[in-house]
Length: 261
Image (cartoon, rainbow, N blue to C red; front, top):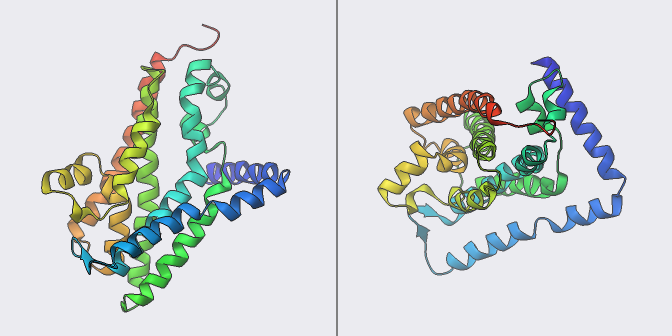
């Protein structure tokens, strides 16, 4: 484990060095990448100018959810997104050959090789917005609530990675399968309060394809609304799917035809 953490840190460092070679472009990206977040907040502000709550969620609870979603997806995009988008092309062109011969886990290497820093503003602004919303909610601060929130944020990032990795692994069978297009639609659902969905859909998005676990559970954990059984399910589902993703990836490798074959 320590070996992989050190390797990941070194890969991350080289990505920063590469970005700093184009400093003007990097600064421009950091300055503009939070606009989508701002527009999302403005949209909900307009909605709450006409209603007091949405499916039992008050204005600042929704804002808390918006901030949390941007922070979680910002972390994911920084650490994993560019790698996920490269995997289908690596399979198609045979570039995966170069990763298979490395003396480390192939899944780890293709998942963590690159980092993308465009989403860093969303992450920072998202967490700052969450902190501001927490003060507006007049919730009693406790280290327990903060620890629970942090745990489920990490769980949400890992769960999102696992679900997306499983999706792109399908490219071993369907090279032209556009998993990312489908995935963006599911991501838009994950950003919404769970209670806005009808019962069967909410159940499916919690226990079948657990997209609502990613963002809703950290918020509910901080607000003290997450049942212990549901929280335990979220952790177990993430660990189980992460283990399954490795098994599924190793199985999918049997379908791989390298560039030399």
